[in-house]
Length: 115
Image (cartoon, rainbow, N blue to C red):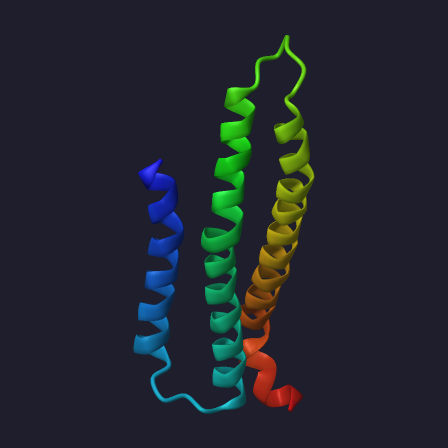
């Protein structure tokens, strides 16, 4: 489980290092596009760790507590819709922010020509 947590952090740390080495003090249009993408990626990481992961762990705990043969408890039925909504919201926000990050990396070289 620790390896799954370390991989996103390692990816972000390597991205920060590359940005700091390759684009220090870059205030060009391309640099601003990359900074926007970096902020989106960091927000995506934060949402995943602060909203998505705890919600997923709660859903996994509820799933382990229930037995397949027995009907779910009323408490479990009351918690599930909120947890599912949080999971969907977290996934959609993370996907949108990662999309912004990927697009910014794809277009940063051409940003000077577009502006």
